[in-house]
Structure formats: C-alpha cells, structure tokens
Length: 382
Length: 136
Image (tube, rainbow over all chains, first blue to last red; front, side, top):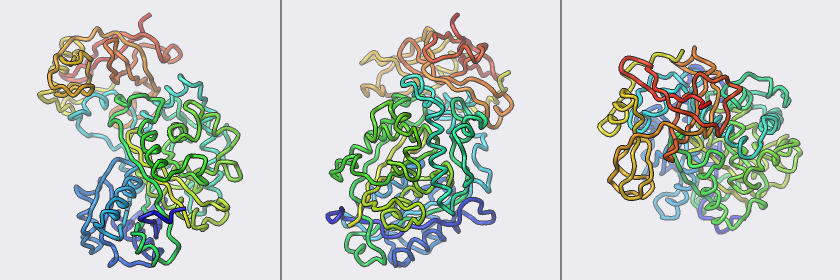
C-alpha cells in the first residue's frame, strides 16, 4: 500500500501537552519540530518548506521560521481551522510532486489553556460577521449544538448515542499515558454532566488544553533515507462550504467532509471498508457522527446507530480516535495535527497498549471552524 | 433580560447599513437578486446563488420557522449572566436563514419547525435587533 505514492510522513511528535505554563507557542513548536525531525532522522537543515497555522502572529510562518532559523523556499499558512494540518498534507504532497521542495515541516502550538484566551470576547462585529455575535451564541460549541439539534430532529439521533462516542474515546485515553483525562466515564456520566448548549453536555465537548505538534513530510526519495519506514500519503482531499453556522447548507450533513473524503478515497483507490484505523476530529461528539456519515462509513442519519454498543472502543470492530481524541487526550485549539501523529504511529506499530494490530491503512480527518472546512488524509504502509 | 450591547461593537458598512437602519424602523430588510429572484441574507454585492451583481432591497414579512435552536447554558462576555437563553436559526418565508433569539417562550414549547414572527427589540443605544416569538 503506497509504493506509488510521491510523498510520505517520516516524522511525528508532540510537544508538552496539557498545561504548559511558562512556555510560549514558539517553544512548544520548537520542541515538537525538533522531536519530529529526530523521529525522521532529519535536522532543521533538511527543512525547505514550512507549513503552520495559528492566530498568535499576523504571519505565523514569518515569525516561526525566523525563530527556528530556517529559510523555507516554500511556505503555506493556510488556516481553515482545526483541519488546517490535513490540508497542509495535501498541499505538501502537491508541492513535492511539482518539484518545489523535498522536506516539509508542519507545526502547531497553542497555549490557550494557560492564557485563558478562549472566548475572551470583545471583538467587533464586522464584515460578514455582523449578523451572529449579538445573539450571544457561545462559539464554537453553540454552532455544533445547532447541528446536533437538527440531526436529532431529522434522524432521531439521541443524547445516548452521542455519549457513546465520549465513553469509547475515554477508554482509548485510558490506554494513552499522555492523555489529559483518563478516569473511566459512563454514558450516564455524560448525560448527567452539565448542559453547555443543548443538546450538548460538558462531556460531549473537547478539552481545552495547551500543546503543540509537528509532522515532517518528505519526497519518496528522501523518505527512503529516513530513520523509520515511510508512512505513505496515498490520498488527500479538502473542501469548505461556509464560514458562519447560519450559512451551513444543511446542518445535519457535513458536506465539506463528503467532498474531501470522496476526493481522498478516489485518489487512493480505496473505499471506507479498506481502512483499518480511523482518526476523526472530535471537537464535539456530534462532529464524529456527522463525519462518519459524510465519509461513507455509514449511511446518512445512521451515525448514532453506528457508534452504539461501544463499537469504536478498544477491542471493538471500528477502532477510532485511538489516542483518546480531542475529547480526552488533548485539544489545544486546532487539533488536526494530532490526528496525523496518531495515525502515523498506528501504522508504525508504535502505540503499545492501544495499538490496533495489523493496521496497514489509516484515515485522518480534520474538521475546522463550525463544520466549515474539512480535509481528509489517507495513509498506508509498505 | 438581554444584555445591553455597546453600539461601538457594531461596525456597520455601506453594504449593511440599510439592514441596520431598517431594524431601527421596525423593518426586516433583506435582499433579492434581480437576476434569479432568490432572496439573499446577509447583505452583499454578489448573489451567492447565480453570482449576478444586481440586488435589490425588500422588506421581509418577518414570518418564518425554526430551522434549529439551542439553549445556551454557558455563555461568554456580556452574555454570561443571561443564561439560559435560546438561540435559533430562523428560516424566513422568503427562503433565507438568519440567526436570532427566541424570546418569551417556555423552553418546553420551543421546537424545530414551529412558526415564528419577528419582534424588534432595543438592546443598546441606537441598536435594534430582530428577535422572534412563537406564533401561537
């Protein structure tokens, strides 16, 4: 699987995760980048393309490259929210195929937990964003709640079904010593946790943590000289459909994920049934249901039934979010890079107690904004 | 009671001013594309359906249905003390959707698909917002 691929992931790493008081976003990205390059057997001198996304500088790429002392000949600061890093993978493959560079560093870092920066508010209501913020919807959770309510209305999806995702994901987190939340929870615990925005409870929502991550992508030729076997990028796709939740075409259908998934599977020549391990952005439990349906793992409206009976938990027939996800492992604002890190480790067989035995294909799917953007990456090993 | 919202937060522009001025006169103004006749909200210079560049202002009836809603139990900034409150996406009978609040309705009575009617509420100095009430 992947012998014809033009590019591969050769290095992955997290920085410190959870609470990182005293560390800056630059330190976290340096830490993750150094560890990912070590993982690849590469150095900063090998990096000739830089991809990052963040709102901590007016041009994060300029600041990060200067800080790291690298002078990329290709740069991409695509920011479409939490799916940015899956999009970066696609862009990196395209750049490598075009012969524009050979080794790309994708980096992310956030200190949102220590900064208490989420939802500080006070932004003016301008341009196309004059028509929502005056109503006080807590974002992004309120937007996902609106989608969940519509999904329940159209398909009869239940709070218990949403809770199945949170419970199964926690079971994976209990197998990951890096996970932030490792105490077992039950479906009743989810249903009894306080409302944030109906129908979403606290335990339907991702964590707010600090943390960073890095992924190194190399051309096929350079990948063959990396320290570990390449994890081939065999398919990718991206799409976005709206900016604000009011303008989502259909609140019960993740159309961006339908488009990105279709493109990625077509490129790889695979179908959902061919995927051994699945890492899906779980900003909220509803995000997972919408994405499973959109990617074709189940029919539209059947996401709730699909995850019921702990089918996605360790030992179940559909291993999903095996690091414990944004719900229980870490979620530093834009989680997408951690999906790629876990998918790569699963294909390398590095996951210890949470390893999915014999995994040869993996899917990493990012969702950004308020179900606005999507990017899908399919990975395979020789 | 809804929070008082400082007028300085609203950065109206030449394209959106007719909408805001309409609210002050208890009119819910939206646009209609001169080429394809479809309604458009929020205001803009291009029809997002057919990409024509001629749009006209119309006054919406103010009637619609609840497309989706949530009850916010946690909110931020100036809205933090208002919880719980109901935010909805309203589908106007002209065919466009807009975000709003459902007010003066017991939570148990609010449901997707119910008909609603606009009501104009002053939320700050010179700021009027379109909220919605259930049509009984």
